[in-house]
Image (cartoon, rainbow, N blue to C red):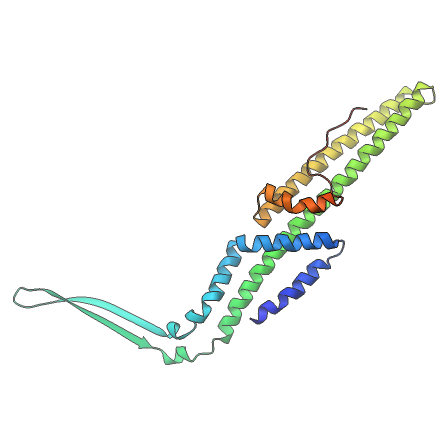
Length: 225
């Protein structure tokens, strides 16, 4: 099937997407593989393609008609059955290439649609994860700033107003982190739904990537000033 010759090229294109590490590209491919057998549109297109040889072959050129009629005499009734078969020679010898190619193209289009949906959800998750990392770094920076100002205030090198302003900046950073982690959790749910996986199954697939330097999907506990 000529349409499926493009699949290795599509896989290579995804693997070389800008900003993706090799581990992320492999994970994306795995998510697509998980999503395809669970997508109704792709499964239907694949079933139509697999059934095409019979539907487009001699069975598709044969038509059958069956009927029943009542017949009898002297008050006795009997059933008479008729069955007629016809073979459409023009249909039999018609070129099946265009129809088969159309089914191949339909299956390939469904496969590409699944890949696009999964890739979109995956990139949104990556963006949310990066935003959560940035927010976590912001909280650490504001905590260090506040501690430094508190130490300076104890020796009279910083004013109470400066300490209060630093505490407010830390509060805002923690709020940004909470929002970022909420967005990350929503992105994770969207990715699981798009790939047709449970959250636990998706987390198991993401674990090697997270252990390699990722951000936990659970919001960290806020620390006191």
